[in-house]
Amino acid sequence: MTTSDPEITAMGEISRAMDKVPEDARARVLNWILQRYGSKREGSLNTVSIPTNESSPEFSDFASLFHAADPKGQTEAALVAGYWLQVSNNQNEWDSLSANSELKNLGQPMANITETLTRLMKSNPRLVMQTAKSGSAKQARKKYKLTVQGIKKVQAMLTASGEASS
Figure 1 (cartoon, helix red, strand yellow):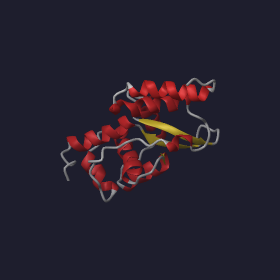
Figure 2 (figure 1 turned 30 degrees about the vertical axis):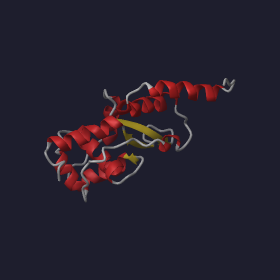
Figure 3 (figure 1 turned 90 degrees about the vertical axis):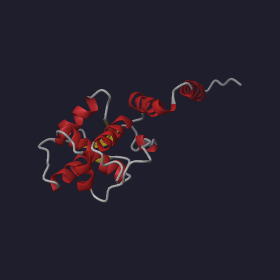
Figure 4 (figure 1 turned 135 degrees about the vertical axis):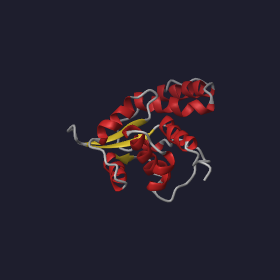
């Protein structure tokens, strides 16, 4: 069956291509597609969920997670805060103010968490991605999301500290 609808044709080509990609790499490919071709419409990125490791330990509070992950430096601390907001609290996205508030409550505030999150967005592999921005000013409120690699990084930190079995 052939169709002249370019949308249907593209979906068929993507489906055939994704069938060849190993399952553990599909989320990275989908994230790349969304970043490259994603719609600018509000909420368009919220419809894609990033799979997490179902065996991840659960923590009753951010302090317990932070202690278990034992982050080294501001970038790892910001990652752990994002993990708490996104994975532990089951949110699709989060903002820098919420992440910094969690860190501030532990006595670990960041002078400029947005700069730290930008470094994580520019890292290779990309550990954080921006999903939305409200306003046009440089200081506009931004929403973030950990990538699959960002989630895996925090899970590796938990495993390395030996707390993942709790």
